[in-house]
Length: 311
Image (cartoon, rainbow, N blue to C red; front, side, top):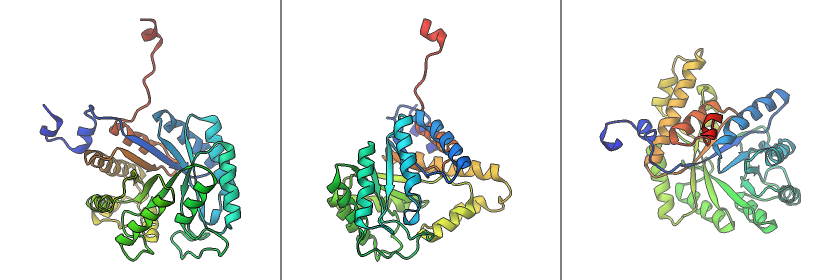
């Protein structure tokens, strides 16, 4: 019997097999110290066997993690099988300074940059004021990157209206300008309005945008942290999600299970809608992301046991 006739939900149908393996990518943040570096590399090693299309490393507000980002990306390139992408922003730097970073990445062997406008130092979602001698926005940055070397350039995309944008139409025009400047894919911010996301992507496609759009997935176990982040960047938290986490402030294990359940169902539903590329905001933790990937059919290659090899 076809899985679609069994009455099973999207997660069970996703686990039924028979579908092409989707592509996944993972975002990490540079470590702040020895302890966080150890946990970061534990997560990297756990997810590396899943063979992601690429992994990205964030760039702190105002370029505050410039050296740590560079060091982490280069280590990934040299010590793993991963294809690392470095985030880069326009904030608090001249064009000459940013261009130097771009050239350093190319010389180090990095071939993929995630070009973002960025946030002011210490102010996620705060008012942006470009430097007169710097790149003014992500479109200019994308063009600057491509003028230096033929990088693969990913750009950001808000599945809801950007907090500083007058309309969705304006956001789409900005995306098209980034593509004209050389962007090769768009990675969306995280979201929880599933139907709204589908309507948004349909509108973007109708506007003639053909590059891959990767849904950004954030399996967060701290609802307070999620709420604070969402408020600052303009992401709507639906009532049903807040209800799920209500009363669980002192119950981290249940929060973890709920976070995995919500993100897994979202990915399974997106897969049924034809999406085959997923970008996970890992927060430098692997457990939830690994479980979600398994549901989607993304698994490490099977290895032969000595008995099998001798047969």
